[in-house]
Image (cartoon, rainbow over all chains, first blue to last red; front, side, top):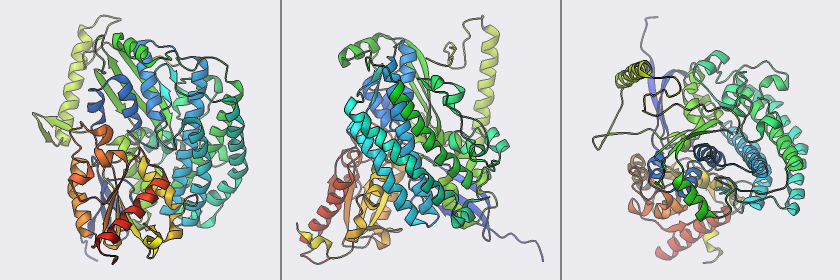
Length: 433
Length: 143
């Protein structure tokens, strides 16, 4: 048969029932096989960093919560850690334990949410309804502790805003017991079901080498067998004392393959891990203050005088989230605020995952990295007042120019104060608090 | 407003115009067993061409405005538009962004607003029912 060009393009999105959020894929398909994919993002870009740099730090904290409704504890934790490093604020031990409890509760709700969405993408709606039904228990606890089902407004610079009252502890314990009893059923439904296995085994494979070279983070990287977890690699809050270990499919007795099945394994085992962490924190949490600044005006006045830069990192349910902040004395708003959300790192892993897969597997592969488009859409170039598109050549040119700047800057530097490309002094962001 | 709104099944299309996922997951929560709107015949459909109600979340970013208009035009009449969330109703915390052209009622006519950041599932259900009751009023009971 003569060689013919049989590659067609299928655009999917930005509005499509298989996608929950606006993003556009352009697939090159040959028959039922995907040969390539192009991803167009930016539909959910709201310019949050830009707005944050025009507001005072407390307003920015609540804005950071609105980066993503699912990670509405992760982003505030990362920004509070960044500001606390920049301004030199101490966090009382009890507040650190409380932050761990809140973020692990969020992880449980987010992973169960993912499991339901994944089941839905497979056409297994019964399982969607089952997981979302059991997910309501953790939302009840979050509502009990924070007053809201989503967007909890819990962390604040210097601590947390709400304590866990003694009468609430039995409710949290009951939730932990409930999920422990349920876990085996969930593992059964997801991992020992032949139809789920048939749809997820060897589908959307991301090898360990690809995950490593594409800098995948979170469960996406761990499912490929990488032992990569910010809570383990660069401990913060009290995660160091709690001894968190990155979960890979090996913990379930499987050699990691990096497919969708492995991603489900990692996320479900992490629910169990989070339950253990919550229980440990409840027992080990010391008595004491929950914030070093009980009065908001005092906090604002202190932050206005603060000067410096800081980096805050946190293992969000989807992976590593980083906030960078720079403060200047006498200015209420941050001088610089940069957010790196986990989906931003995971985006490129879609390319090898989609390669040579079937069109019917698009929804589950797209969902398998647990994409959070609203977290990620924050790149927009405005030059001379008009929005422009950055081409590959432009990026290459920018990248070369940056290397040049760094090299020439390094030549001028004296040890201890090395100017970098952005003109700031480099700071040692050592682990721990 | 009576239960007459529930005489027929309501099909709902959900469009996210740059929302933070908070409202979106509460919409799914409304569909799943705790709130279970499917018992009233309310269900999410895959295309605006099958929908009676448009659920719009998000503050409407610049690239999504044109698409929101198109989805609105693709929805057959009579239709109701329900804005879910504070940012879609008033721009909320995103009021001074360069890439937000909303709120939603600047782009398409809105029947009902559900404020909250995010609103609870009960509020979303109430919003949909209110919109349909209003629609029945406007069309003289015919739908």
